Length: 240
Image (cartoon, rainbow, N blue to C red; front, top):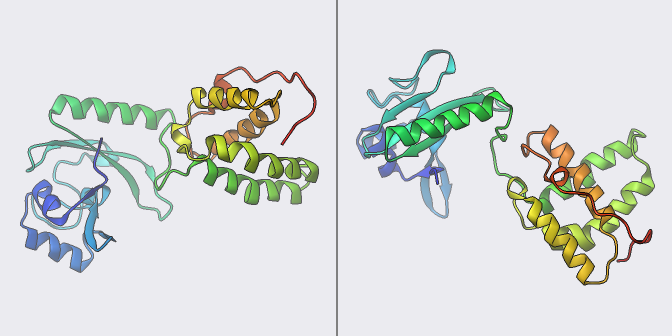
């Protein structure tokens, strides 16, 4: 798994400079850092803005022009790759980091990320929400706006608000949105049947519509609800 953060001393090894130099860059603001549980950490993507050869903020020594990917052997003995996948909300380049023990391994990872970039399958930067977090945003913000604009019936939103806390959140809410798999939905539907709920059609419809919006907003790269057959309602009623 690629590292997301480095301790200053580890960042110094990657950049090939002294710890003192790294702390000077942090203090001057040239190297971005965050504080977590009393520790100072350097985000992996912040290292792309420091030149290993000089220790100065700016373009890396081996970075290719026009935002092309870069691959190099770090002072830590690992190979590192950086790929520009887009632009962050603040207008700065969104560069993602990959690392491995061999050049071939990192080259493969870089090519995979470049492929996702070209096909629009790279998730936006930032913390990926859980299913519960996304459903809350979908219902409270997106659906509420759709109702206000007349694009969703109030009764539909009321139905979604009554069903989601009873089934979607308890059965699927803890999954990270980008790690939700068809098997998770199959298991949720099976659980409903085991509990005597004869129809999971409404649950599937709610999820499918919420995930469709998530794909549009680059929260996830695919709508897993479309990868399985929609449940067939054996009973027109829905039980709580």
